[in-house]
Length: 274
Image 1: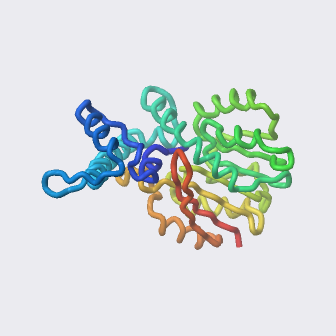
Image 2: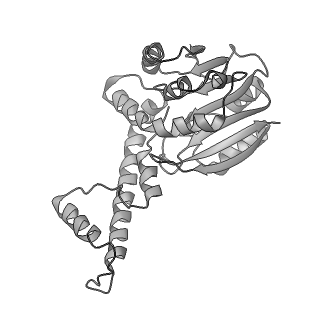
Image 3: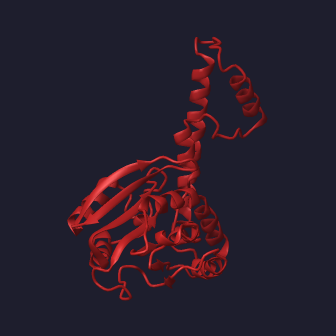
């Protein structure tokens, strides 16, 4: 389960190179503006070339954000769990743009061979590709992938078979509101990228997550709250404070950090089991 990195990449770049002109007129304008980086040419109305360029890029980014939210709102059920068809295919293509965020999140988890690692909403399996690249001392002793989409589970099986390193992976298709295959207090690290929006009711999911987590175990959710639509049933958890408050109430000490990377920024919400 994932969302779009491209918009966040544009924001972090502040418009320097991220917006693609959508017409010949725009392309000509952008070339003319970028060709004079060291001169503040005065334009009609007293505006500078640089300020005009910045304003133009902001408008383009705002329009793209509206389009992204509209698309996600219209395929929200498929974003939670792709089932097939055109909308399912589109959702799966959108989720591919999460690769850089997922790889960075896995790096930040600092996995080791003593970990029992759970990923909720494994999707295309980019996390597994990243883990397979690690030294043996960094590969968890048990890797549990929870993926409710049949489409994604089928793809995961194929991708796992092609990994350069054999991993101790198991795949489960049941909703993570109940994880009977995990004993109490056995998971050291749990991760989900662009997943927490869909955990509704959130307190019930967090109760089960707390059950399986070891004392001082880490729960990490990667979020892109600025991109998600606000008028769908599927995207239920889209307010940062509501999410962190729910995690605190469930028994986690919570921190947040904005992670900035090439290819897409995201918000890391991390809970440590008390």
